[in-house]
Every structure is written in C-alpha cells, then in structure tokens.
Length: 471
Image (cartoon, rainbow, N blue to C red):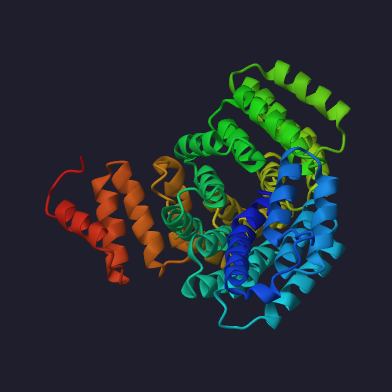
C-alpha cells in the first residue's frame, strides 16, 4: 500500500468498538441470575477484544501468519474482527479475499440496529476503502456521514485521508488536526497530517510531530516510513535510511517498506548530484539500477540525474521504464513529461504523462502548471487556459515566494483566460512580492474589475494606489 498500513487504520477503528463490546458483556454477566451462570468447570471463551489484542501482539512480534489465522477464525463469528481480517488480507496483497472479508464484515454490521452507534465503524472503514480504490469523493461523503453521526477522531481521520486522496490538502490538514484534538493519542491522524505537510512543502513542521508519535508508539512502522520520507524532503537522506530500515525490520514482506529503502538510497545519490558530485551520483545510481532493474524509484532517480545533466535521451529511457514499472507514480510521470517537453522539445508527446501526474495529484500546482504550459506549446489553447487558470487558483500558488517563476506562468494564464479574476489577483500578488508597484496596481485593478473581493488584497491595492510604497 502506498502510504500507511490498513492494519494501523484497523487498530484505530475496531479496538474502541470491541472494547465497548467487552464492557457490555461484563455488565450482562454481572446482572444475570445465578441460575443462568455458566458451570464452574466451563472454559471461558476469549472475547473479540482479547483475540484482537493477542493478534496485534503477534503482528508486533513479526508473526503475521499466526495473527492472520487467529483473526480468520474469530471473524467467522464476529463482524468487527472480519473488518480487521479484510485489512490484514489487503496488506498482504490478497485483494480478492480481502474484498470477501469486507463484504462479510459489512453484512454483519448491516444486520445490527441502525441506531447502534457502533454502526459507525463500517462507514468509517468503507471511507478508507473507497479512497484507496481511487474514489475519494465517495470516501469523503462516507467520512462526513460518520463525522455527523458522532464518529469522533476516527471519523475525522478518515475524512482527512479521503480529502488528501482527493487532492484537497487544506481540507485534509484541517480534518487531521481536528482528529488529533479529539484524541491526542491517536496515531493515524498524526501520520496523515505529517504526509500532508510534507507534500505541501512543510516537511520541517512534520518532523517534530512524527518524533513525538514515535516516542509514544515506538512500534509504529507507518510513523517510521513517513519519517524517512520527511528526512528525504529535508535533505537528510542518510538519516532517513535508518528509519526506513527500522520500518522493514518491523514488517513482514511489506513491499512498500522495501521500496522505501531504495527511495532513500536514491535520494542520497541525488544529494550528491545537488552538491555538484555528478559523476559520483550517476555511478551510484547506475549501480543501484544494475542491482535492481525492476525498481521504479531507482529508474526515477537515474532519470532525474540525467535531466540535471541535460541528457534528454538517457532521461526519457529511464523514466519510461519507471512509469512502465509504476504507472501510478506521479513524480515519474511528471519528470517524463518534463524531459519530453523541455529537453526533447516535444510538448505534444509530453501532454500524456503530465496529464497522468496532474490527475494523480490534483492539488499539485507544479504538475498542473507543467501540463498547462505543454498544452499551450502543443497549441491546445482552450485546454491550456482551463488548466493554467485552475493551477493559479490552488492554495499557496504564490505564497511559495517563487515570484519570478510565477510571473510568466500567471501572465500566460491571464492571456489565455482573460476573465479569470483569481488568475489576475495571483499575478498581482506575484508582482507585490517582487515589489513591482506599477504592475501590482495594473493586475490588481483588473482583478477588481472582474469582481475579485478578497479584502486583504483589495486593502493593499487601495494603499498602493494611494501612493504607499511596497515594503
């Protein structure tokens, strides 16, 4: 799985409901007449909570096969354990058996009273499932239903996950923060929030919260995986390698963890590239590729190295292999599109991989901008106008403070979509960041005439038009 183990989700979702089951069972036992008490010689049956607890202990110890067998037996009589079984099967790549387990668990839940608050758990679980299947809108709707029904931290974490899958980083961050506020000890929303911060360019904010989570839950492979990626983003790949290796040691036959180790090694080589040690980086990446010819991260890293050397032919060859190995890898699709467009000067051919990158990460302004520019040079002007206008409306497009890079893209967007008020306002902010008062006033006035009403922007526009300097 791409980001986190569904077993972790299961620990968040199923355990509270199972604990409540145990409380109800204990209460009923106390209230029952003595005549109905079981015989003293009878061996008590383990509760679903006990089964799950023991299975979790075996998972933590690396004995996944025994944990799987225990949950499979218990799932035959308890739907909530069936949910855990489905998630375990999915984590092992057994998708069809996992789907059967989910269906059986859902049927068990549907048989319960709709008024039972424990009926929240299948709704929350299916929200994760729909987002995982590439249906984030359905996942959002299910999670919102669970939140409205009082699902608490678990429902809000599911909402964050679905919004993240949809590409709504701002909404996902808010939902995850609400989940953490509702349950400060919950691990899933912390890892989810760290992911959102990292992909939004705020990895430095993610590191301390992950460190705290790992201190509290040192057995969390998911937290170590995300920490490794955060350290890559912070330019400390060598440190990230230790976290990735710990994640591998904690999991059994987890292809994501094994792939992450390779990602870290590639990142370490790319750090050499950024430091000007080009030949060393290329040598190390070639060696990794020869040892791991079917590794998409290695092919992607080598492709990026060839892009840095302006070797279009070599870059395209490696990146085409990367997307063949992992068609859903947005970064590989983007770099392939970039190499085709910028190095090979073939914008028409670049459009397809850039479309796939933008579709995989719909909130990524960089991918959307690259697609818009390729469409423009491929003379698909109507589509280019739409894509660039949407890109400039994405949260944080100008706030990244890359004003010089933003201006030509925004000017192109306003040329292709001259009635888009948001694009004009973003162009105005870019000029404001460059302290270009004249162009800020011109772009701002155009945005205002098109109905733009954001008060902070209009206040600054009025002050600059009144003769105040941009400081």
